[in-house]
Image (tube, rainbow, N blue to C red; front, side, top):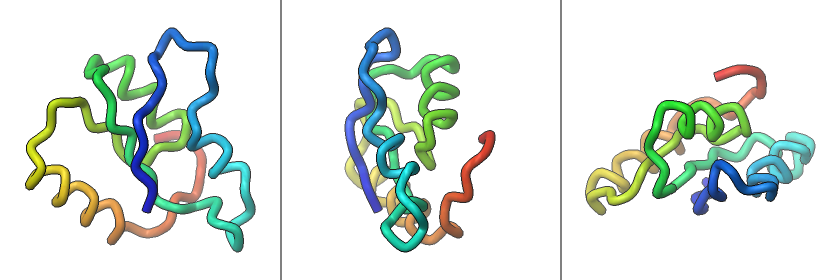
Amino acid sequence: MRSCAAPCPSSSRSPPVRKVRALDRDHGGNTPAVALTAYGRVQDRMLSLTAGYSMHVPKPVDPGELTTIIASVAARPPHTGGSP
């Protein structure tokens, strides 16, 4: 499970999850990943999911809710790529 802050939608930086998704399966390429971000628009969510994140979570988020989200994502089948 990987959780990281997603870059600003207008940023030219590539989201860190793209590097993870580029790895083969045996090296963690389908590791679950949650985008924890200050951006909560529908467009931002779509960008996160298209980039390869398993879930998009806008801040602020309740710690208990975040724990539930992480547990849920960790229990899902591995990421297989493609469209959200």
